Length: 411
Image 1 (cartoon, helix red, strand yellow):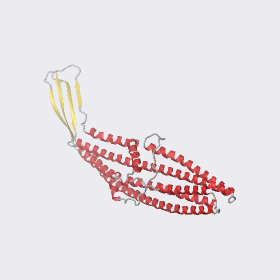
Image 2 (cartoon, helix red, strand yellow; image 1 turned 180 degrees about the horizontal axis):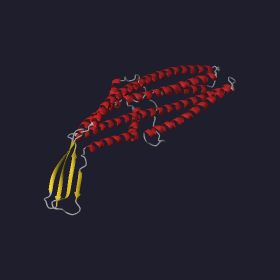
Image 3 (cartoon, helix red, strand yellow; image 1 turned 135 degrees about the vertical axis):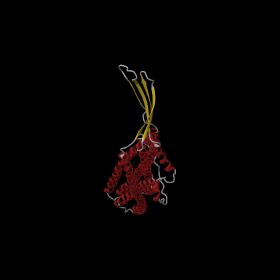
Image 4 (cartoon, one colour; image 1 turned 60 degrees about the horizontal axis):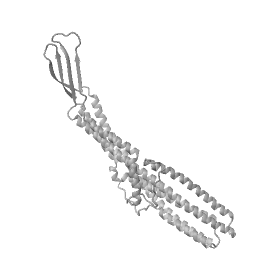
């Protein structure tokens, strides 16, 4: 028995177990150093993401429209001059100016309508920021998951190399055949292939992450070494969904419709204008005549139709709000259940790994007696690898669901 080789494999196995412990993870809730790192990326993405910038520009336009409403109709100027033979007492020229005025309160009603539109657009900014935070978090944890899988594959490749040296020693003393060595080498080739594929996945995900932040696609980021899961998940208050901006948006849109209805009533009222006309005569004194005009909407079917449309729009918004609320509750409930399922899966993989560790210990003892079967070694190693990768997948699924829950419940 080669004691140095046995010591090496035991040390490698202990490192393997320590690496498993470091894989236990959770999305940041306590704003520890790991959460602060991701929060820094989220803040940068919110400041630089073009989708958010586009929504902010739309809100700026809506805000500017408030100023636009505080204006009167164009002032009308007119004039005329008679060309030809002058006749006694005949009017030679006339000039007039007229300013139409809306009904009392119409301008303020337009301002209230524009302000309501701006408030509704402001909520779109909040929604966009939440979505960017969720999408970036999910991308970050996918990168974390890929990186940890690469580490697991590296550890398994190194472990297989140790097994290969054990097999070569066994071949030399006639305890096993060269086929066992070839099996171990083929297994290493397979794991190396998977590692190379993961490198491609990491590069693609890194590009996606950087593009969310609107920066160079190959810019490197810092991924935490480990994340720590709390013993108990936070309780979810489904009633807090009523404060979610996706639902508050319908309240703001209802205000928009209400202001549109108030504006419609003002615009259906008569309009009036004031002006002045100056007339020049050949031989008679010139005249200055004040003028007043009134605009009466005799055919007011247009305003009645708009009022009816606004009423229907109120009803439509209420139905849409109820549908959206039902959808949010269902999505949140699904996320909670999936999060809980991921935790259960993680606990199951922990149990499986402990049993795989016991099986490996037994194989060590068999090697000491010279009766090791390398087919069993490969079987146990493959099981252990699958448990580790499944463990990482469970953590990734947990993070994904927590980011969704955070989108719905974060204040």
